[in-house]
Amino acid sequence: MPMISPKRQVSDAENKLRLLFCVDALGFVTETQLWPFVASLNLMEYMPMQLLLHELMAGGFVGRGTHALEGQLFVSAEGKSALGQLGHRVMPQDQKRITDAAPAYRAQLIQQAHVRATYETARPGAYRVLLELREEALPILTLRLSTASRDLAAQAMHSFEANAASILTCLYRLGEDSDPEPALPPAAALQSHGPHEHVVTTELVTGDLVFEVSLLLSSLSGAAAYSHALARPETAQKTAEHLALALCGLPPSVPPDSIP
Figure 1 (cartoon, rainbow, N blue to C red):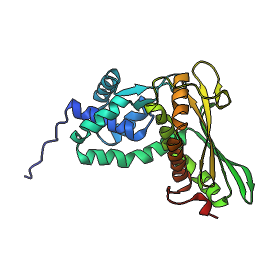
Figure 2: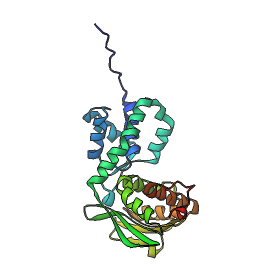
Figure 3: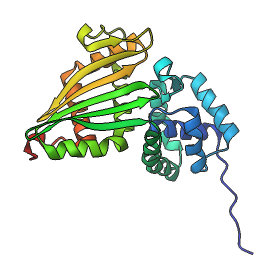
Figure 4: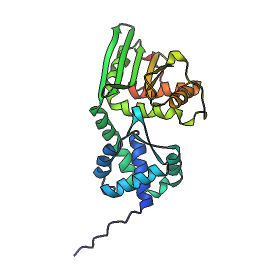
């Protein structure tokens, strides 16, 4: 009779790190959305996941958004530090399974939201594309891309749905390393629709590509931190290059104005 190796016992500490890896890989995600992902990878049962997740939240390793971002979980700065220091305690194969499965699941979640990609202008040498991500009637992210290239405009429209989640996560995380009390953005860049819904609009440029980015934030302090981060030229440039790569497939070394 063949010998069957017993299933490896995973400690609560390792399962907490697994959950941190999952939330980090998915970006902003609700508890309801997190469980099917954890279950699909056979990482743990439902009740242990709930208990460990709430311990992570109580310890400040996982945060929860409010108001416009209510219910959205994210890895906090403390959680990032824990992953950096202790993440090696998670089996490499588990880390790989999580990171490999996350993009497809994240894309599936985005498909359940309202994604719109349309031309606002389409004439030779002048193309402007409107890209929107909404939850219910609430506009979470609005991107306007202006370019002289028809091919890049078409590529952005084609790529937005698959990359909207990673773009949203990238933008939300910009304010994490900001000054403790940054100044509010200029009035022209900030629209407040109540105490908990603030839209900051910024312009980012790389080569021929011009991005007008409007992002919904749940607090004035968050709006200030986000705006302050993008006021740094190096951060603005890296963010513009991230958008160019995600939407148009252009790495930083390829100048967009070299595309016909």
